Image (tube, rainbow, N blue to C red; front, side, top):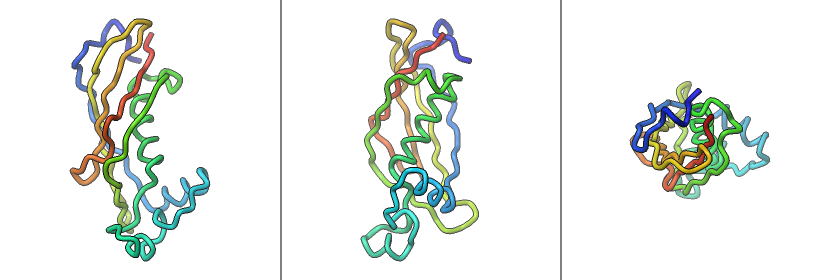
Length: 139
């Protein structure tokens, strides 16, 4: 578990890789209630101008939130979180799917043992989230 006293502004967070497959998207659709076929049907995704099936934006955002909570060592430590979506995560129909690589830096230390994390999420070398920030409370 990361401690507030051990964290410095500018500290780089080790990137982590998260795989997403078409099966993950089907499961997420069921859990979220978002059954938009661009997330599960290649023909429909292509018919609306997408290169292939894409991950739900909220799925991608959730992976960034997962990264922040795993870094902090406690899912309850994330007290603020927000992102902007910049590009979709394209998920091919194979056994590998897509990889979302998430990393970041400690942007600022705040009162109350809070730190601001500036997160970066990429898939296929494309930035998929912008303005991704998490405020985390540390012991």
